[in-house]
Amino acid sequence: AAKLSPEKLLCQLRDRVNVTMIQGWDGPFDTSEWHQYLPEKSLSETVGRLGRCAVVSSAGSLKSSRLGQEIDSHDAILRFNGAPVKGFQEDVGQKTTIRLVNSQLVTVEKQQFLREALYNTGILIVWDPAPYHAEINEWYRKPDYNFFESYKLYRSTHPEQPFYILNPKMQWQLWDILQENSLEHIQPNPPSSGMLGIVIMMTLCDEVHVYEFLPSKRQTDVCHYYQKFHDRACTMGAYHPLLFEKNLVKHINQGTDEDIYTHGKVTLPGFQNVRC
Ligand code: NCC
Image 1 (cartoon, rainbow, N blue to C red):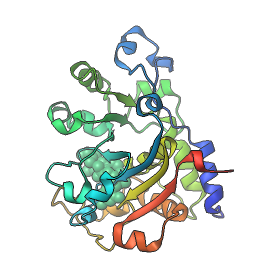
Image 2 (cartoon, rainbow, N blue to C red):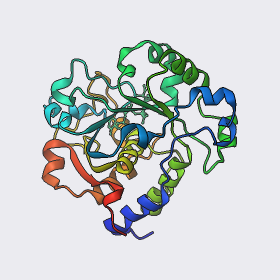
Image 3 (cartoon, rainbow, N blue to C red):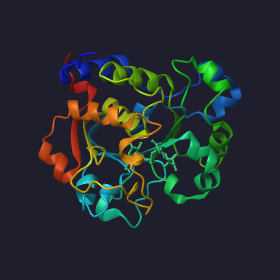
Image 4 (cartoon, helix red, strand yellow):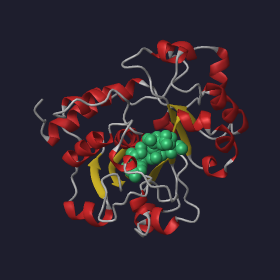
């Protein structure tokens, strides 16, 4: 398993990872009931063409980073799960364009998800781990977390807020590329929200800056910038193949090592700007 050059790897990501949202014509969603719930416009129609984008990981190393202004200078900003901005603007900025949430949050933390104002800003995207290369029908019958009822409830109470379901095909297309470019066997679990969010933004934006996915000099065992909880697995991975994701992102980084060390910052091209 020889590693591809950064250029070839970018081409593989561009050509083999199909970033789409579930739409009304996708198998089990092709019902009049689902048509009431799924957004009419595609994600790219909703966001338009984006220039400079930021992906903000939830890592504890964002604490005291004072990266807020720099992050807010982007045209669009993606955040994850329950990561707050209120009270943390200095370090993580205050704008949210897209929030990518996992199906566990939407299901297990349903009450908070339906109630907390933090979810009402920007565009929501939910994803759920699917069986390896499963068809949409199989996944629909057996999602990892059955978030569909919660999704419908949220859509009914916030009909104006765009809320998409990520097509689960993407996770394993991306996982295959991670595996092919690693020397070791990777656990057969889908990539983290962080890695999925990075690739989503590469499809929508001209340029993507990722903050504290590759840890800076502020690297810490504190899991999140917004909690006191300690666990090394948050940065290195346990369920998700985080270490392999981070190696891959390091390999395609177009910024400097200095940027990683001081800002935890990686620079990636949008797929429109990748020549194969
Ligand atoms: O922690 P989580 O991730 O919400 O973080 C979002 C993304 O930020 C990157 N990250 C986070 C912490 C850290 N120290 N280093 C990092 O690089 C990762 O890329 C991560 O994906 C998830 O991926 O969805 C995850 O979600 C949580 C949890 O479900 C949600 O926060 C909702 O409460 C998972 N934690 C648990 O299940 C306990 C986590 O494993 C993965």
